[in-house]
Amino acid sequence: MHPLSARLLSAALALTASFAATAQGMCPGEPLCRQTASFTATVTDFRVSPSTQGNRPVDVTLRFTNRSGQPLILGQVAGTAAAYDDRGHRYTLQNTRLLTGMGLVERNRFDPKFRLGPGESADARMTLNFYAKNVVVGTRFDLEMSVREIEPLPGQQYRLGREHALSWQSLGQGAAAVPMPASPAAPKAAEPHAPPASDACQGLAHCATSGPVLARLVGATPSTRGNYHHVTLRIAFQNQGATPLILNYKQNTGQAIDERGERYAVDTYREAVQGMPMATRQRASSQFTLAPGESRTAAFDFRRFTGKVPAGSVLTPSIAVEQYELLPANQLQLVREHALSFGSVPAGGSLQPQQLGDALRNLGEALKRVRP
Image (spheres, rainbow, N blue to C red):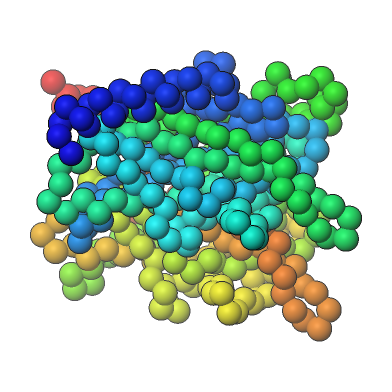
């Protein structure tokens, strides 16, 4: 595309997006939050990786908060998620497994697994790709997607409800916002039923919550094996609910991005995940069952082929776990998928949560001292 045409296209997209942002509502004081009558959607992490074998991935984490006084089910409308860089290139969701936490709404079917109680928040993650081989790419991005409400009916049936077009403008590497609680501007009739959700992590670093799941990073151990750099993360899972909780790690969802944008992944071989079963499309297990209030720890091996690129020292890891319920005849039924992100984690040693926070603060102070 000619540079002038790209600039004109980018300007036109920005103008259109600004009207869209005004129409959909921006959360007071938070430019990365979008507000509708029933929920808010906030970009909490946005990362761009270098081109690998021609593909240039963009990773986005969105936090959705239910503003209504009723349970809320959301799905992403298939084909609507896209990012446009400032040279006019379009990045899209090229594989459904690159969307975690939230299900898709397609022409003839939809997945109602993304459920929020009144005042509850949960994350959805997606990776958008553009084939960028031998192409000059941009550095600022406009993001857009549509989500649709899914309404429950008697007899475990559902129907599609309102659709919401969402967009964010001029996102750059590392763009993030502190997730906001449910807005007090929700309809008055809903207020008695929708108190702001409490912070189950109570300010702890590297802690994530989603529904009844509380997950805390309790250790990070690096190692080098041949041409691969490994970081083993130990994560403690706690059941915050009142009924037994069955969890499985969802295959192919564990990934981490280092400070250079290089990507680490949890492989599919059995030893890559210890302590928790790995679910696939064909199988799941009830082995990792937590009683109310119980905690158990699992270990996840993130690795990257280093080659000529040095190993990373700070990672932003994320995984997805699936929640099941046990039916008669020992059958398992998928209830919900939880996308969990843990922020920036030093990969330089085995650290406890408080030590992780102290290491990050020390790193920030060191960067300030060397900054011109």
